[in-house]
Image (spheres, one colour):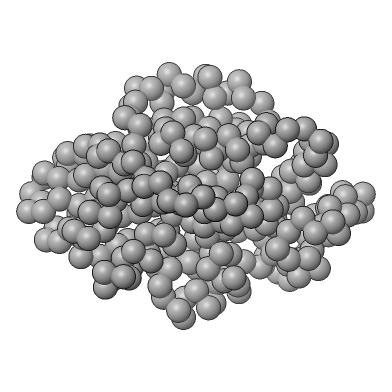
Length: 320
């Protein structure tokens, strides 16, 4: 359960893309030209070489929550794991003490509760939604959580499958099978603290909008849901589309630096030292890879050759 909540945490750092689906999409078109200037091949796996590296390393774009049938390895990704000395995720998912303390980072500061930021009518709508068993946890157990974490619970419940997994978990299972070290580019505490930079009231209002949208669209085809659309983008390995969606929501633009761009720059500063003498696999959210300020372009600007590697997930028995 704790690791699933941590996956929610790192998934939420790409929240702008998910929330953009429920609002106006006109901005995405305006941003398309800028994104296309750095158009990338459709693949999630990339090889990093050159600039003094004696051995190549690898970069893979994950999605933190998927239907289990979509969370699959490819032969090329297995090779990257096998060839790597260590695997770096956004956070160290194999650090028991750090993951154990994750819950304490998910609560709002100042002993605040969700009802502090909503009108009685808004709070009732959210409470009524959760009465219908629309989440892993009842609302009274999440009252003090940062509202975006509650948003994640709703998104998880709407996934078009009963069995879910994250690419991090699939990669980690394979890496541990091969006795590879697991490490993180950031701490869980740092990731959770990012949400303190986004006003709790804004987070709470976004939660109400998501609940209202879910109720209003409950009788519409599931294929129209934003989670289906995001899954399709990931299945198509369309990194450009991911960054286009991430940049589409006007109300989130002011937070993209702390959610994405600053973190990308921090990672690219660390990566040269980490991969100087050993082959490594860096597996981070696919939304971090594309665009002018994405990890791929930043590595290229730093002098590295970053080339696409074909990633064709193996077909395994279907999980319903």
